[in-house]
Image 1 (tube, one colour):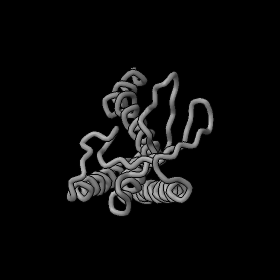
Image 2 (cartoon, helix red, strand yellow):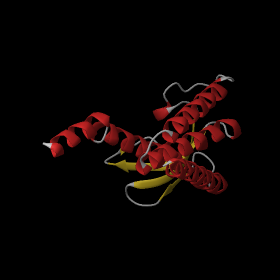
Image 3 (cartoon, helix red, strand yellow):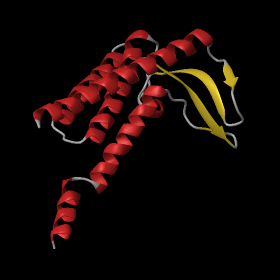
Length: 170
């Protein structure tokens, strides 16, 4: 059983590395292609833009304080370590992949805090004059990973497994 659990951790690490690479490559391409405030219209509902998020989700807590990128990157790194330790204790491949998506996304954005003026965002969806805040590949993986963890917690968590087992044994 120990070999199986460690292989799930390897899935977490492999997906995290893949997310970091995909995130950094797409950001490098956007930075090479665009300079602010350029907008490239792709479709009637999707643009490529170049934005630097100096805060967290939806630019919350954005500021130009010199120490802030280090604090936010440090928090992302600590959360990534804690999540990896938690995933290592799980016995579910889906949870391992969700953890890898979140860790990879968090570390991809943390890299930007050290190398760019802010987290590079470039995906811009819009409809009827409303623009969803720009985001990036890392953000997409973070959201997908969190959705899987929340879904699992609501519908497959320990209490749900116990209820299912009790119902089946009756």
